[in-house]
Image (cartoon, rainbow, N blue to C red; front, top):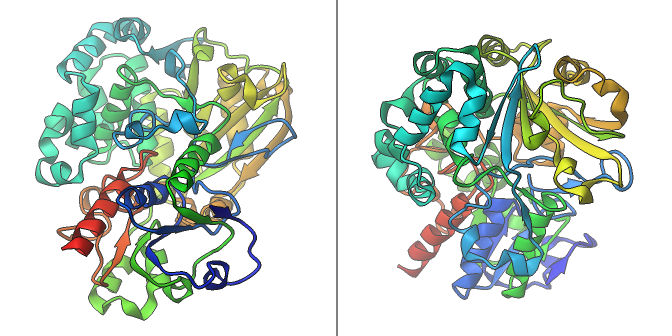
Length: 488
């Protein structure tokens, strides 16, 4: 059952019912937690402040009628391969994945581009003089998706054995810049690795930034970088459909500012970040724990822009149109300058840009003959600066004539991102800075990181292990921990 008409308080809209569990927030982690609990036979209410479910996994016609744009997240390397999502019959609830052969592309000045896809050999051929080095690297990592998931998405293993995660060893603890410079000789492979590592929003000189380039790069071959057909909303709708079909209830348009607003329940799981939990839980939190949450650090933000186009992007380099995801920024030195500047509070005139050209592979996203473009760059947390011109100039740099294809656009500042999704504090889409002290002990160091000192209250957001990404595993682990403790 789902309701989205906010005509009364949350308790009144629930007819004063009692539940075994209430989950705050319908992002991938929140709805995953709700599904786990309803599978265990509990009565579960999922409360969402927005009028549509999905949190950071939603779509809308942001530019013109008939053009479907993903509001926040968009490409899901860990979505289709999520150990939890794979156990759910989401196809029966309307989800269909599109998995382009090309996972990502990285163009350079002069008409060259690295194009990475499912084939290791074909990908390596675009790396120039580092073709053999790339093949050796992929082989050395002993690619196995099940093993990758087991190590990457199990917080216990990350906490106890960070050096052995995905057989990355000391590689994972290196900075992306050092790793690229010691592994590759030429600018193509180095730049391409920097483009993937920059997803972390970390400076490329930061320790552990190489891990993000390795993890995301590895998924290109065994899994790919897929997208839900019809938009990110389709994934959220499929999860919600399965949840309600299993007996769960969803209440939309019901923002929660205090735990006192919720109907009685044995458990409360909050898909929120630490600062939000402080606001919602108030005086119920012990002073020491509350102080730790208040000291939690958020990272740089994003400025996002969506385009309606009357033609495909006219890339100068061949092969870029074979990939749904494109990284713009040129050499590793340029990307390093852009990303490190953000941490110093600077806005780059030549920013690293992450974009997705969905409609090349999913014609349902735009009217016939038209196209969509999703793009963002990193900016300082809380920024209100309009980065439309720098982003468009970067695209034009590698695709001369791009600006002539624009028929409409919609931009969202870092502050605007927080309005679209309350979990994006200051525009931080990762649920907190991915600094070493917050990689394995998010949000604070506790034996069970999802638990709080308040009985029955748990966190289940990207601010808990295993962190960001659309995979639902934070919610899965939190719900199982909550259920075990409740039953004990």
